[in-house]
Each structure stands twice: as C-alpha cells, then as structure tokens.
Length: 519
Image (cartoon, rainbow, N blue to C red; front, side, top):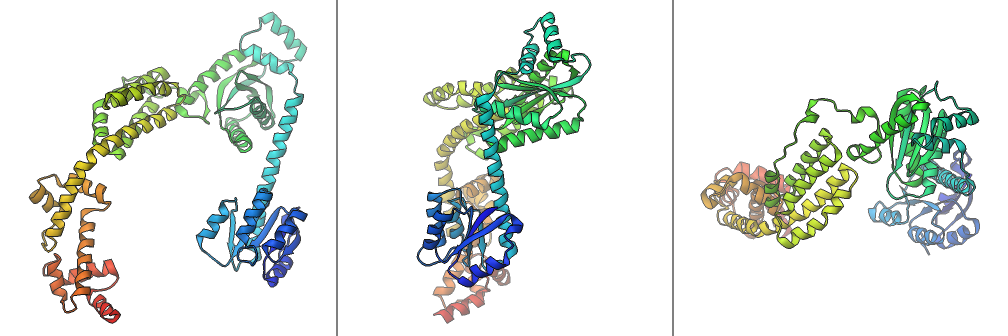
C-alpha cells in the first residue's frame, strides 16, 4: 500500500475526497489531511507519505511552495496538484520538481484515482528496477567463474584442441552433435561497466529459458539457444531483452544472430554473428541483425558509386542550409542502401568532406582537417552523418552570412518600391522583378521570404490594409472607393472590402463606425 496525504484549505474538499475515493482498491491508504502547506510539511516529515494530493492556492504556504520544500527534503515523494487556475505557469513550475499530474478543479474521484494508479505503477517500476539492480550488485560480489561459460568462451574462440574438448564434453555432460542451436552476440552501446555485462547476461538467460550456454567474450555477451524456438518468437524475445536492459540502465544494446548449426560448429556460428555485428555500421546502434540483413539483395550493390561533389559544394556556397541538409540525406541514404565494404563507404564520406572544407580559407580548412580523425573513428554511418551535418552546417552558415548583406540590399530596394508604388494596381512580385530590378521573379521571391519571413503577396496585402486603417483613423470623411484607389485596389472597392474584413474582422464601413464611436 502506498501512503497518501490530502492537503486543502477547504475542509469540505478534504472530507469529501477522504470518503468518496476507494483508496484500498487502487493500492493506497489515506494516512492524514492538512489544511495548508505549513501544517502539511510538518506532517509529511512525521509520516513520510509516498504521494501528496495538494491544492495550489492555500494560505501560509501554497502548493507550489510545498512541492519545492518537500522536493528538497525528500525528492522521492510524488505530488498530484489541484487548482482552479488553468494558467500554464503553474504546471510549468511544478514540472521543475518532477510533478506530472496537474488536475483542474472541479475534478471527480475517477480522475484522481486514475492519477493515483499511474503514480502507483511508476513507483512499482522504480522499486522493481532498484531491487533488480541491488540483486545484480549482490550477485556481482559473490559471482564465481562457471565451468560451462568458460568452456563456451574458449571453444568458440578456437582455444581447445579436439582431445581437450572431448574431456570437458564428458565432464559437463554436453551433447555436441545432436542439438541445433543459434548463437547470439550482445554488444552494449556507450560507456558501461562489468555490472552491465552481468546484467544483460542475466536478463537474456531469464527471457531465453531454453538457452544452452552463455558467457562473456571481451566486451560482448554470447548466448547459445535451442533452435526449437520459432523465429518470430526469437525476435520478440530479443526486443524484450533490449527494452528491459534499457529500462534498468538507460543503455542500448545491439544484438547479432547467427544461422543454425550444431554446438560443435559454435566457432563457425560465432564468426557468422561477428560478421552480422559489424553491420551495425549501417543498421545503427540498438539494431537486431541477422544474416538476411547483410546479404546483397540485387546487382546494384556491385555498381560503382558516383556522386557529384561539385554540385554539393555549389549548394554549400549558396548558404541555403535546407537544400544542403536535403542533399546530405540523399548522399548518406544512398551509401546506406548500397552497403559497400565499410572502409570503402568511409572513403566516399572523406572524399566529400575534403571537397567541402576546401571551400574554406586556409585557417578554417586546417581546423577542419584536424577533425577528420574524429570522423574516421565513428562506428556507424548514422554517427558519421550527424558529424558531417554539424560541420556542413557551420560552413554553410558562414557562406550565408557572406551572402546576407548582398541579399539585404536587394530586399531593401523591394520594400522601397512597395512604399513608392503602393497605389499602383499592377504592383506585384513579377512586376518588381522584371520592371524595377531586372531579376528572376522566383529567385527574388525566395530571397524576400528568407529576409522577411513572408511571401511577397502576403506582405503587400498587410501593408495595404495597414495603410487603409491609418487613413480611416486620420481622415474621417474618406470614402471606401477612395481608399481602394489610394492603396492599389483600383476601382474594385468590393474586393477591397472583402480583403479588409479577412484581415481585420470588419468591413471598412464597420471599422470606420467603430473608430468614430471610440473617439
């Protein structure tokens, strides 16, 4: 049972909740109530509840202050906050201290019970995780080498001579000819300790109860399982291992699986699994990799790879990161699909990287050449892509800044043209580009949107309506048809009225009346 305390300055609410909520049915018990934060904090120190349900607005010490004080005293105590205020600031303040449940009054008992159930499940998972980790630590202190693990490790790595292995086969009563098995390798991603190797081995053994032998080989875990397990079920269990291990330690792992064979062929199966594991370079950390994943599917995988470096470099020099990013995605997706030898793939990436950094001045290029070694050390194509994108964005941004002043001067001229020709019905992006600036209209439109954040037509409409509003407010006797002519709608006063209403919510006449009444 999880202990719960109610805190609210309205007695009728605490009494009502005390009686209405079926505490025991959701694994909780009500241990007390308090009428404000000050009283609640003293009672919390005495009774140490697991969950506190508190109003936010209370005299003395409000709910948010109570959360902050309790979090400092015991961060493991969970809160459900109740309030008649729907402002997001309250929820945001509470989130700083890990509060996930923010319920608006009035709320019924079902809403509160659902929140309590969810917190109860979170607490159960936390306790289960802590208990599991403690068991692993206890096992680590008392663990002794197991003969079968040592046998498997030395056999798959070809240490034993046949005559030696026959002796251990009889000693451990192993049938090395009849059973068909699969071999799995587990590689933990990121920085880890021996405790983590022990944990993933323990998890794998619990989930694959049919396993024959298991051991650690260097930084890898190895598991032999009976081939009687259905292939679809094998994948489900491998995914379960990954998720369980991540839940406990927030570390991912990659799993490689061999084809089937006899235990006497364990060395061959081990090499198959290692080949699969190498392809995490393409499939990514945290993958489940089989022989099917690494086989070439058609002849295109044997084609020569050609990529136009100069096209990519031209995009970088334009300073347009969106287009550069799209091209990087195309490049890496194609390499991933082809799945050349890993060193060959890296050489293509290095070639494009070198072409890109040659666009920089000598000092910048030397700085990027130093980072080349970091690129070569990366273990997956996804991590190479992320690193490459980071460098490309820096270089592209530099070219964007160089081009920005030139672009800004062009757009300043466009804004000047709009101001001087606002009353001209012919004013348009095409007209400005062709008649005033002698530029390509599509290119000018892209520049305009990049600089102003808006399409030319939208910007022009807003300027015209803003001018109309100013004239209505300052010229009380102005006519609607005059307004339309003066801001570029020509003789189409009806269309002007429609656009005006869409922008302001009023017709020009309605806005004029509102303005006169306001004065």
